[in-house]
Length: 494
Image (cartoon, rainbow, N blue to C red; front, top):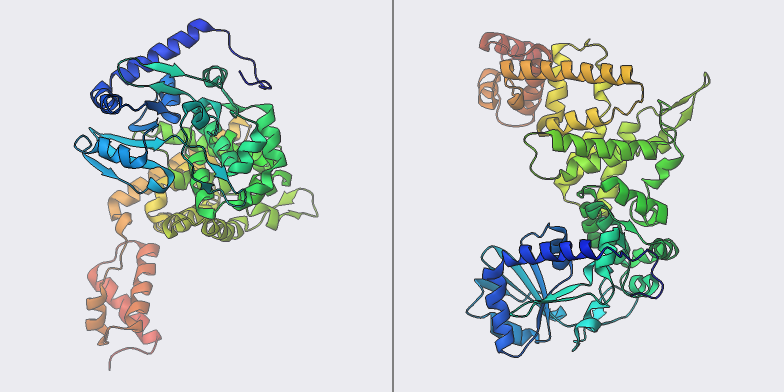
């Protein structure tokens, strides 16, 4: 037991037994992979333990296809023991004592016991191999990840830091002091937020205090690694809780400062404590809409980033009106620019940056729909501007309705239902997903007698605008419209 644990140790022995029995059943289903692997190590005189997140997830009944092991065998010995058994193996992590392999659909990582030292300037350890399991477990991030199961003919559960009690309590705590753990690797503070999101756990008070005191240490971590943890936090089942931990601890000030900046901004409807709380509500409602979508297969990173960041332009556009109240005019334009800057800083791909920024830019467009006054032309432009993001835009706009006025909420949803129905009707009639001018480039060149070049591009854009404004044109009408435009541009053939 930890001497200064900040949470009560569970005394529910029956529940512990049930969890362990469930884990045994889960691992038993993988006997065709685990048992032969364990036999190889046992026969060679080595220990082999399933460890870390694999044990945690087996206990929780959510074990996937990744199996993490630790052993007293050195990497070169592990490679030899895997030879002839694994379907494939690779050594990209050998510098850190890890050998990876694939077998029967399972991704396997086997790491030699570690007893690393950290320089506490970067997060890179000075790799040192250990000889004992407990010394390896104490260097892990959280107690729920510091459990191990010896595999083989005589399985044995090892839990020197009461990780099972922490798991039952739903608490994240560290095997040693959090100050030592986070000083060794500040990324563990972001991992805490990620596990809060993924597992629905809370952090122990001493862990929260250390995160708050040591938040600035996160600047030692590269943007790429920060991005990975933030993405995983957003993709969890409880992303708002993970983000809230980052904000409350002060970590967000260093990795996502635009989010805590929203705490002071009252939203235009005056229905939420602040824009920050509103944004977390929108994020959760976007998650709920994902789950309600019959075509939903996996969490949507782009939608979740857009939901969290859709209002980050409000602090910069806040204005107190003379008649009272607060406005945030054009915050979607400012917000889209801020999104691009932040996501590029986090080293996101251009695709993610562009998609999230476009959703933020478009999220207010619907509010001009009124009671359905948009012309078909306006609907076409809405669909065309959204492009392949239309389904996500539908979810974002619906999630952005957080009013507590039930009548107003019902009206907004009914209005958006109407817009979606019009989109579906016009799309079916006109194939809006592939809006193109009624004349292609070759027809334009032939009719105007011009070679490929800027003139053709300008003509193409003009015809597309006509297509959006009026819908499909006949060939004769399109040619007449192009000739009229060309004459106005001084391009008509003589």
